[in-house]
Image (cartoon, rainbow, N blue to C red; front, side, top):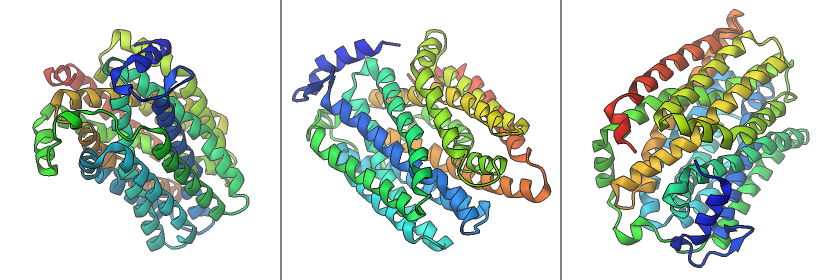
Length: 423
């Protein structure tokens, strides 16, 4: 693990950054990408966490119906990323990132009119299409801009910027919804327009990538190459289980917060604020500490164990304070997973050659598409059942068991030859 100072030095001197203006110790392109991470997170968390509460409490939707809409968004976005990743390889990460943010803005604006389940599904799909374009392109751009040996630090900075947006977004959303749900949708949409403009103005139009040297393969060829990478495919399949757990941050946790506080959004902003404060405080120290003693896959297994423990502990929560403690544990655990996973995927893609960064990130997104969709549907259904049967602990015990299975599988995989061959 490297220090922030060494990362800045590497970014300033790396030859890929010719033409990049250095601002306060880092190239302008890096600042722009961190601004994008902040903007994408800010706009997303202004709106999406409020969806489950608003549609169930104000419009009378069931939690399962809202879970279906969120699952459709999740599956559509991540399920399309192999295709959008291949397109980004062909047409460039920067324009695909900007286009995706504009489409996401249109999708969020459409939520203004989504007062029925079919309209909610349409808005969710448009928003998902935008995310499919910008998310995979953004991660590939970060992997291109940051030198190979500094990627963990670079993605840790990316996570920090995202967590700042995560902290502020729900607070702004909670204020705006006091005026109207439409105001939340429109302000969130405008943030993505701002991000698209910033991308086109601040990121150099031509960054040297592997695709500039080797023509990227076609989509069928890309799929064939990735599917032959058996260790990566197995790892991606296991990570479906992790995303079942992590997506509860957008469905069952907001609903449980509303239950514990008697309805409304009063506790929701606090939950995401605590999540962000813990992540901002522990991101670098935890990654640095575990990097000294554990392999990447073992570290991810440890993080999954923490997420499972945090969700299971909510079954014992009898108030908002106890729930905030569980969320803090989850935030610390996720610090171990996301930057290391991004670094690992980028390394595997680099070893594959052929300018396939976005394609590998796109394939890995299938884990989120499958696991996240199952998580949204399962979480909403479990919450409905728990409320109907007077069993508030049911969702959390079930999720804890799933987390135990995921952690055990990752721990076994981390000791295999396949895991060692990935990086």
